[in-house]
Amino acid sequence: MKAVEEIQRQGYTILKGIIPDDQVINIKDDIIKAADMFGVKNPNNTYLATTINHTQSFAYYTVDWRIMEVMESFFGPHVRISSTTTQINESRNKRGHWHADWPHTAGYIAKPIPDVVLHLTTIFMLADFTRENGGTLIRPSSHKWGSNPTYDNEHIFDDYEDQIYAEGLAGSVLVMDSRLWHAIAINNTNSRRVALVVRYAPWWLNLDVLMAGTVDQKIIVEEQPGTFNISYPPLSQEAYEQINDIAKPLFRHWVQI
Ligand SMILES: O=C(O)CCC(=O)C(=O)O
Image 1 (cartoon, protein in one colour):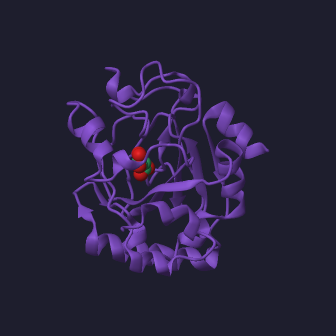
Image 2 (image 1 turned 45 degrees about the horizontal axis):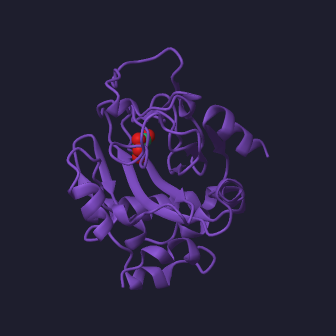
């Protein structure tokens, strides 16, 4: 399969037209509304963790067959969604630092990072992604380098000759191996660059460390200074009920009990 082959070889692929044109505006509006009301607003970006708690209109597209074909070919059945985070990059924001995503972050996986796909990060483009408005910066094939630049004393704000911008029309989805080096790019336009970051994990990857109050987060994160620390709020029962039935199995593990 082309998408899987591209992810294996270059660390990413772009799936076009996952959210149809006539739906993408509505979903974008729902997500902006939720992020502006419940998110963390910084001068550079607006961020909303567990966006699925606040709007569920995008859920159906997280299980689009083209996405699931990729996920299941890496992880087999029982794929889970580990996070749904709105990422709005505001006009004239600052460039972000090069990084790989969790769990390839400090304190989790010994270096060199093994050459195994453990987690896949997708970025749903809810605005067109262009070079001008800050389509995500990526370094193709960096998933094979065995490192996370953020924790390896790399030059994390440098420009590199091999870096490219992930570009695509609204409704497209960038799918990358979470090891791929990527960075927030500068939005040089007057419009907000709106995206939803959805991450996928196999059933056996321990996501408890991402949940505040769990024993594993205590042992693996809080009691180990320097470990990358991020928590995603649990999914409320009410929000879970609103999720499309086809998508529910991917979210069930995160429902608040
Ligand atoms: O917003 C982007 O383009 C990149 C977001 C990102 O780096 C991340 O969510 O890890």
